[in-house]
Image 1: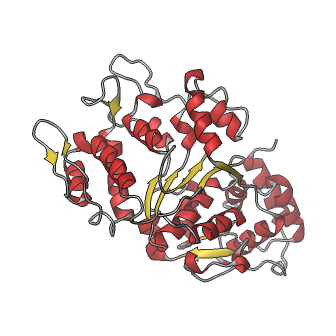
Image 2: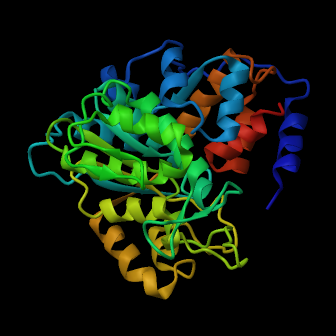
Image 3: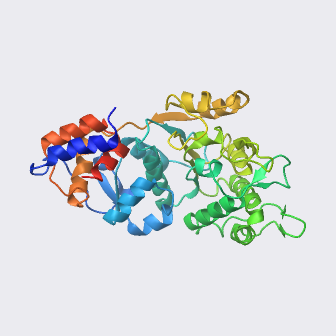
Length: 381
């Protein structure tokens, strides 16, 4: 297989001396649109995210390559994938007071756009007034050099003060209009001196977790439990990217320099505790792009949640979650989607040379429609 650098060289050689008019069928939506207003006619077209939402909804959770492009171009635009649109349509009829089965597991080849699809659905939920519980990357929890502290609450497990603090900040930014509405259902004892009383606003509890990082992990645990108990008052979406990281080896070690398993991390334990019976919508995504200390021969749910990367003693747990979700494959771009993406790059001068039909054919051949590969190759054109 050609390396990306050599692939780009092939395309650059084709570009030399070639100029053409824009592809006739390539249409770029060069306007901003509220995701609540998206319709069937927008599927497989580009649309832009309101600039204010970029900082609120997606401050640090987007793939680094896509974030770099967004910063360089000065706006966030992406292709509305059909899978995202179909999930948005289903969420329109979601009723928190009624039985439901919105439990999806996104999977697909490396770089196919699973994280972007997840973000598109999250953006819809935020604009529709949902409370969103979002874990932007489990591997950022399990492959981290941040502090690991033995738990005083659950022997043999570990808290992650800095990781929990960062998550609480992001949660409050994303759900600022909800944190004062959720009140504690019971008293919580955080330590010998710190406690919170039933009826206290969750906003105050989050403040305490931010001021005292040693308590931040326990605050996250309490927050998720209280949100589950508040179900029915408002719509809640639980979204987790890189979910298979909950069952894959970590790069963390304890004080004895022994490897720590993900099941020993209280943030992971709390997450897995609530997923099976979570009362709101659940959207999980799989990825092997940032896996360390192990490798998977494939990218299917069976490879990543039931394969060799999952310890045998945990396969029953991972399989139960897998069986409870509807698996949705995120495919590469269609030829039409790729051409619309290229036309957008040209309009925004991300590509500074006109693209010939020969180059289009070569890009399609070299990338097979993979969004990440296409983006990487075009960055050098």
